[in-house]
Amino acid sequence: MNVWLEVALLFGILLINRLTFIYVFNRRLHLSFSKNPTLTFLYFIFMGLAVAGLFWDYTKELFFPDSILSVFVGLVVLTVLNPWIYNRLQALDKEPDHLAKANPDQQFLLIEDKYLLSKTGDVLFQQLVAGILILIMYKAGVPFDTLVPLFAGIFFLSHLHMFLSTRVIWALYFSLFATLGGFVLPFLILNVEGGVYYATAIHMLWYVGSGAFFGFLENDAGLRARK
Image: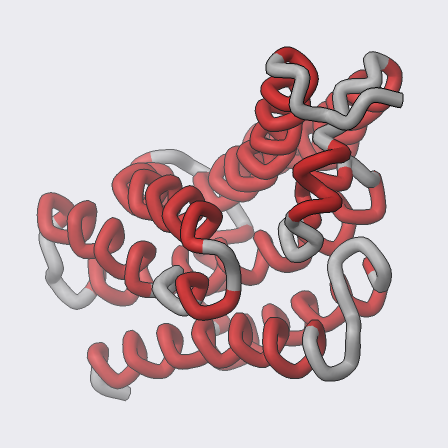
C-alpha cells in the first residue's frame, strides 16, 4: 500500500473512532467512560486489535521491545501510581466536584477509578495509531526534524472536532496539550526502546494530573460549593 494511503487510512480510522464514540456510543447509546467502563474499554481494545491486525509488522515493532523496562514502568504507572493519586485526592477531599458537575462531558474531573480502566483503553488505541503513523512515515524517508512539527500539527487537527462537541475552553485545553504531545511522541517512538509504553504512561498520567490540578485549583480558590 502506498505510504500516504496508509497514513490517510490510519488518520481516518482515528477520527472515525473518536467521532463514533462521541456521537453514537456517548450521545445516542449513552455509554461513557465512567458509567460503562468495561464496555468502553472493550470497544477501544477491539478497535486497537483491528488496527494491529492491519499493521501487524509495525505493531510488533512498537509493543515488543528487547527490554521489559518500559513495559514495567508503564504497568506501574497505570496500575499503581494513577490509582494511588486518585485515592489520595479522595482522601484529601480534593476532587473538583463543582467543575465536574458543571462539565459532565469532562469525565476526568470525576476522579473515579473506573474512569482509569476505560480511558486506558482509549489511550492505548491512540498511542497505537500514532506510533504506527510515525513508523510508517519515518521508514518512508520523512526526516525526524520534519516529523516532529508535522505530528504536532496532526495532533492539533485531530482535536479540532472538540470545538463542535464541548466548550471552547476545554477544546483549547486539550488541543494545546495534544499539540505539545506531538512534539514529544516522535522522539519516544523512534529514540526510546519501548517508547510507546512510556508514551501511554505519560498520556494517562496527564489525565490524572489534570484531574488533580483542577481539584486543588477548585478547592484552594474556594470555587466548590460549601457543604
